[in-house]
Length: 515
Ligand code: ME8
Image 1: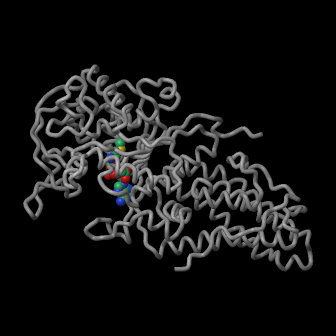
Image 2: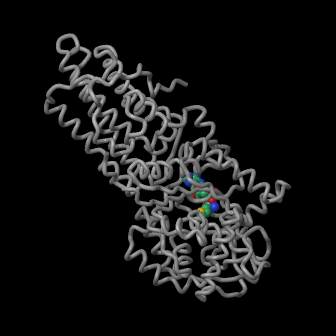
Image 3: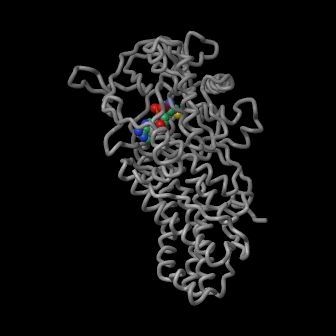
């Protein structure tokens, strides 16, 4: 029995909720895989994790897409939300709830936060006239727009074509929160990660905040404003509130008090302003505690090019999984891309990671060690003798991995956590090459036993710690080492393989990829 690191402490982790106006793409899959790895890590480290994900079904773009397809907006939302949910399931995502902002409890939560902001005196009625980006559901100040070559008014930052909008709307007094937000970034620098994003947010807020239009009257696909059903809420007001709905706000106070504030919102870098400026301001106004951290991952590009339907390079995550298998795809994205930075992928890069990292470094080490144990020790864990300095150094490195990897995952440096595991696999491959157990077996079976025991121990520890990244393969590998399926939490790192334990016949876990 072990004292566990998280000791049952609650931990609430979320993804962004995607717009289901089309099919999910690899950028969405990347967000789900990475958030799932973070959630699984915390769970294996002893935390009581709640992991929320879902879809953001409201907004003008959804209504326009449905009109273009000639189907009711609710049908479009349902059909495509089902596809996002199916993708999550295919990715092995360990979410606890898949929320859709059409869920009835979400309407209730959105009304409640609106009411609280209104009671705080932060909502007033006025007329909005300005530029709106339907694609990103964003308002732009005139100063942040330009005229493009075709004569369209576009958003300077991304070139999206804007629509002139004039209507009576409710405003949120965002301007009143400038100082409080700057104080938040100052006193809680960990609120926004990585640092480059915090700097962006701070300079945006220092530039001054104008009040935010938070209702619309020109379409009706959204949550009605309480008491004013001719207005629907601006989609970002209800979308951000999903994080509260997901933990029972406002009625299930037991769940809410346990999991809120959220420990970590994972989002992409394009929606940092909504999560790091609007969201904390809404919560301050409503008198609700702020999430502890927002971390923005980068964007994925296909061979360095932005994915777009017109270029025809949008990758369907299902096809990648069909071709390479789920765990290799998970491993590839988490290891290849520095989490927090943009990343690129290509067939060559995927194949090279599969063959070099998975098949050679990890798979061969496991397969060689296990098959020699089969051959020389009747398929049972051998009894180690006294350790040499080399043996002891390697075992010590492996034992130190949990705290190294935890430190990296705690700051969402997923790629560095994986790198730490693979550096010990590299050491172990050099160790087995220099010890040459296949030769030793002819002259010194006791020493062979020790060497193979050390290798199997490293494989066991790396397999335990790689579970968040490759849940299925690592669990098959742990089966081959006869590790009790009920004792694969990270506390099991300090266990040891028990000499004499019979092992099943080994089968390769990470085959080479041959096109
Ligand atoms: O923004 N690479 O929805 P969304 C990596 N509904 N990540 C990407 C990406 C790419 N190429 N393209 C998109 C929304 N993403 C809102 C969120 S949250 C309360 C509401 C990421 O479908 C993007 O950054 O446009 C975001 O985190 C997520 O996918 C959903 O994007």
